Length: 308
Image (cartoon, rainbow, N blue to C red; front, side, top):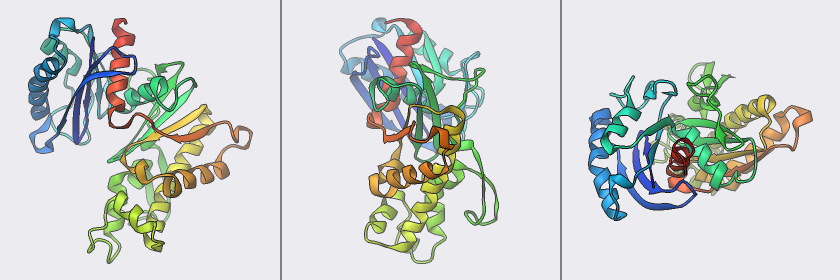
């Protein structure tokens, strides 16, 4: 049995399984950013025995732990480099801390990389390689999976499509070089909507609210969402030029806007922007594993690292 842990900016999840695409028991909690990393660690300390009891097992059954962390991580030291959302994580030796807590070895990786592994092995990317995974939620993250293995560059990560720099005239308050995350994340959508008179007053700030409004034909909501899909399409087209994966899998809360307002516009614009010899080689599909995607990937990572 393996333990999988997801540590995000708003969500904390722990799951038990064999790393084969099935979760035997799941614990889910909400993160309080004001309590920082220490507050999340206290939650994990409490959650582990609750989860083990739920599965009618104990720590002695654990072969290893996989951790998907919401921020950059260092493979060599197995430490957190930084959290961009929660204080109290910079340089923290998370794998060692978890290992000491549960009495089993632990492996640490970025959450988007881990989610990509889950989708490649058990979800929308199953049977294909390479797979490029993108999560579009509060932020924008990416992961590249080649032959069922996470590609990590020289050991501090890779495939950071959310930090791809775009020259975007007119998309921000000042024409400047900004990232995909600055333009296409849930935070970016809310910020753009808040600057439109009338939308903010009606509380129509979230991606879901804007999508609901756009389906009625509202031109402003459609324009805002169009900015989002255009920024993603630009980043994806450039990524295809460099990597030409078999499939792009997109998950995260913003992707739930759906086919008509999200996936179709992205596909259409990517088709126009992609390097012509690569046209039609990469398809773009929704993620399949839902809220448990990082747990699936973390369990699979633990299995790869510590044996099945």
